[in-house]
Structure formats: structure tokens, C-alpha cells
Image (cartoon, rainbow, N blue to C red; front, side, top):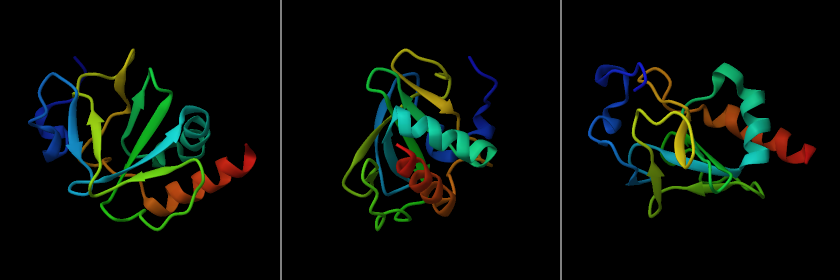
Length: 130
């Protein structure tokens, strides 16, 4: 188990339990879904400014969490915005490595969301390099 204590994780994660759960986007956060190759470049650009990131080790996908309804107008080929009406599979707090679904950047109360402006800029820069 990682060093995350109940008080150090965001309130929405406290009742997750030991298994992966599908949570509705749009309530606590929206998610930005990108392929692993793009996501790796974005993560390098953001560095310590990245908020929580879920990795799908089997699907080759990364998901950034952003404030609800903060990315809905983005037009970025290769990035999918998951907001109200979508669900996201969320790993339990202790899962910080693969295989399968895990926290590449675990959320904390201080570092839950990624700044939508910074994430959009990093995505745009990373998508133009491809």
C-alpha cells in the first residue's frame, strides 16, 4: 500500500474501496483522455504542474482530471473530453503501478486537478509535434 492516508486524498476518493470503480464525470471532475504517446509528451511538458493522471496499462491511454466543465469547448484531435454523461474507470488509491488501471500521478487534496489552461497548452504543443 502506498503512503496515501485517508485525509490526504480528495473526498470523492475516500469511499472507493479496493476495486476499480466507474465514476461519473462532470461531478467532481471531467477527464481528458489521450493516447499514451501523446500523454507521455504532455506529462513531460507539465512536470510538477500535472494533477492526477490515470493510466490504462492495457489500453495505452492516459486520463487527466480537470475541473468539471472546464475543457468542454476544446477542439483537439486525439484528445477526448469526458464530462457529464460519461463514466471513467478509477483505480483504488493504492494502485500506483500496472498492469491494468493505476494512478500514474496519484491525486492528493493539494494536487487533484490539472490546470485546464496548462493542460490544453501542453496538449496542443504535443499534438503538433506528432
